[in-house]
Amino acid sequence: MDQDKKISIIYMGTPDFAVPTLVAVNEKFNVEAVVTVPDKPQGRGQKLISSPVKKCAIELGVPVFQPISLKSPEFISAIKEFEPDIIVVVAFRIIPPELYSLAKLGAFNIHASLLPKYRGAAPINRAIINGDRVTGLTSFLLEDKVDTGSILLQKEILIPEGSTAGDLHDILMEASPELAITTCRMLSEGNYELISQDNALATPAPKIFPEDCRINWEQNNTVIRNFIHGMSPYPGAWTYWGENRLKILRAELNDANFGKPGAFRIGAGKFCVCCGSGSVNITELQLPGKKIMTTKDYLLGYRGETEGRLNSDII
Image (tube, rainbow, N blue to C red; front, side):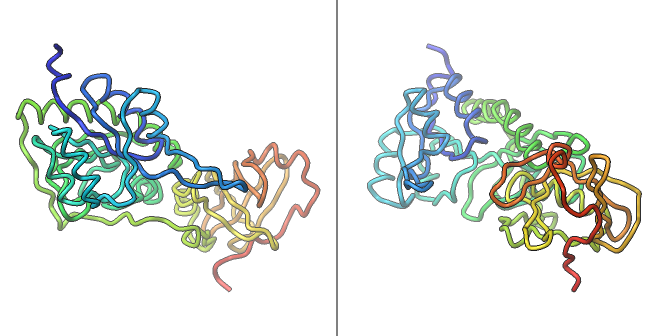
């Protein structure tokens, strides 16, 4: 029998980001069970929708647990019966000690930053918003306090110029499986050295809400472009255009300066907006109830004002 297959693994995750790693870990090792969130009602019919990780687990033929509470004695008892060697966590909830301590060799999480930088729920967004050129992935042992555990392994990844949070999400998603497999082997062989995180260097990456996403046109164009890309595709940077809330998903830097911050000009297939210094060309946008469109496609049917001002945060 393949030595890797002798390792018993419980996998925990929810979104698309966690799917490639589940597939890879299951292929290399023995994933006994998957833990994910309960199905959630969506849409007008409130149809129950399963998480991407659950859908993947079913395709792989791996048993799925969907506990409402991770502290449920019945659930913990069920996981204990698997006698897991390792618990792998990718994009999931906070794991209580009574659960992660069941892993005989260790329970680790893969986080989408180079810890201790960007602890929290939105590390990918924050890296783009702050204009970082390098980010990465970290595997670390779970501890009581979120994202503070000892580091097992890190992988640096360059951020391509002009990337959105969505672009970086996909890059990191594809890099995550290799890190997870290597980390599992390190734990199974006992061949690793733990690196303590320096709390003095820690930076927060808290969850982002739609109300945090309004564009302040008084800032310079680089800051605004990074903000737009860091919020794209979700939750989406926005500004008021008349009475409509306009989401802006991509933008390019422009040196033009033709008016006050928020002033716009539309022409020749371009939608240019002035910033505190410089300007940006909006290249991808979305109006309420409409699909995301390139600006070029949107302007093909546009018959509105070609000059004006988008509402600024400065009244």
